[in-house]
Structures are given as structure tokens and as C-alpha cells.
Picture 1 (cartoon, rainbow, N blue to C red):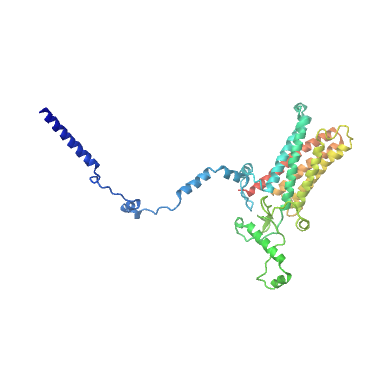
Picture 2 (picture 1 turned 30 degrees about the vertical axis):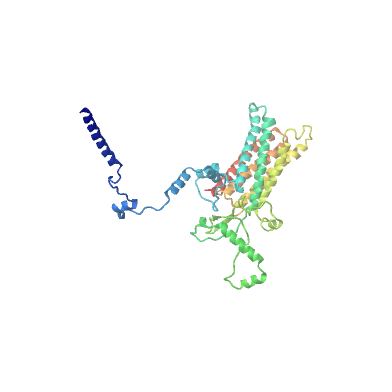
Length: 414
């Protein structure tokens, strides 16, 4: 009896469990699910009332935005050492341009190399002036290695940097040319002009006219529609500057970059006779480069041990003081030519112009260097002191002029 009851209970529980699992395993008994696409769902809720989905690659836009916020090291290095140069001088705030001077270093711009080299060289000469002047004013400041090591080392370093700047200035004057005045319609967007393409087109027209036979040229002269007027002076990439006196725009050339194919390192005889013969910029740069070479001779002969103590008193002025004075005099001539080039009329100064300020401060520095080399010839203690003082403030004047030139160059880099 008990066995019968137990078997009935097991059968009842097995039937109940089997029924439960049968319902779970049967897929047909599951409730039907309705699947629809995203577009069908929009149609059901009234997609016509919604705006059209924007058509733009969101991921690319986000990525470009992230690149602007966090530029890669490669882009940062390129923008720092190879920035884009504008063909027109941009007007910007003083602090903004000072920031560019400390963040952008266009090593392919020969004008920047000139300004940067003379700035560093002048700063080294200022340090050299301290080493020469402080022991005279306060002998207690003299230290053991100042006279035998610090003073000559700073003099040699400054002279070497001046040589680099002088040669770079010669290349700048070689590649920098003046163009004739160009009349531009008032209201024209000068910055939008592709000056490089215009120059290349003029060069091609100039070359085609030179190679064209004279008979063809004379036949074209009768037809006014076919005549092409080509400027007589070829120039590199130009810069347009407004003229205060007229509505014309004065076109002054910009030297090409070192990577450009039209950058030249040595002129031909024909170019000297035709292009550079009356160029004040070229003459000033050439004279300044010669001055740095002569001035370096005085630096070499002033080193300890080059001229023995037993040397005749006549050789010291000839081998040391004369090159220093002559180098400073050539610096002065070059600075005067820079000032004249910045003036529209040679007797009217233009102190509000940046180029004029560069020439003025370079002239002051040249006077200081000339006095530093010539006054010690008198042989008096006062003359030596004044000459040393002139060397000190002359170095400061060169530093101011070089900083002004650097400041002007950075106006072309936004």
C-alpha cells in the first residue's frame, strides 16, 4: 500500500516537471516578437516631422578637432622651424610679434638668419664688453680666468657669429631686389594676389620676348591688342606696401627661401653690371661682409700669445687697432646705405620706418666699434677707458638694431 502511494506521487511529480520543461523547450509556443529597422521606427513615430540627418563624417571632424587641440610632434616641429611666409607684411600687435620671435624659427628665410645671427653675436659682444669694462670700473670684480679665458673666448665667439651674419647678409642683398612701383586699384585685396604666380608669368613672357625674332617683334608692334608690356626688372617673390604720398602700392621684393630654386649664392658679371650696379641693398651687404672679415683679423691678433710681448709697438696698431677701426668704419658705411635705402629722399629722415631704425642703430654701433679701435692709438689711460666704454655701448646699439630687424622679419609669419 505504501509502495503504491509512493509510486503515484513520483508519477505525478514527473508529469508536472516534464510538462514544464516541454513548454520551455518549444520555440513555437514563445510569443512572437516584432523586429523593425531604425527607418521603420522613424516612420511609425512620424519621421517627416524630424529634420534631415546631417551629412558629415562625424569621426573625421572630431579627429581633426582633436588634432587642432593636440597637434602631433611632427606638425608642431614643422610649424616652428618651417612656418608659412606671407607675401605681404601683416600688421599685428607688439606682444603678438614678440611671441612669434620666441616660438617660430624660419631657418629657410635668409632675412631671419641675418637678424638672428647679429642678435646673438651682439649679445655675446655685450658680455665681452662687461668683461672688458668691469675690471676697469671695479677691479674687485676681476676673477682669475677673466682676462686669459673669458674675454678672448667671448670675443672669438661674437666675431664668428658676426661672420655668419655678414655672409648671410651678403646673400640677402644678393637675392633682395627692388621692383618698380605698381599701381593697384584702390580697394583691391592685396593679400589675395598670388604674387609668385604673377612673377613666374612675367618671367615666361620676358623669356619669350627675348627669344622671339626681331621681325616678329616688329610685326606685333603694329597691333596694339597683341602687345604685352613686360617690366624691365625681374625680381623674386614680391611684397606690396602702401605708399603714404600716393595711392600707388610700392612693390619691394622678398628674398626667396633657401629651398627655392631661384635662390643664388654668387652673381654673374652680367648681373652685377645690370641688376646690382645701382642697388644700395647689395652694396651695403657687400661692404658689411667685407667689414666683418677685416674686423675678425683684429679679434685674432688680440688673442693672448698671437702677438708676443716683444713685438714692436708699431705692429700692434697695424695688426690689431687698424683692422678694428677699419672694420667699424665699413660697418658705418653699410649702415648709412641702409638708412638711405629706407628714405624716399636722401635728405629727409624717416625714423618711423622699421628699416630706418635698423640702419640708425647699426650706425651707432659702428661708431662705437670704430672708436674702440681708434682711441687706444693715443696711448693714454683716458683714451683706453673711453674706447672700452665705446665698445660696450656700441655692442648694445648693434643688439637693438638686430632686434628691430628680427621684429620686422617676424611680421611676415602669422
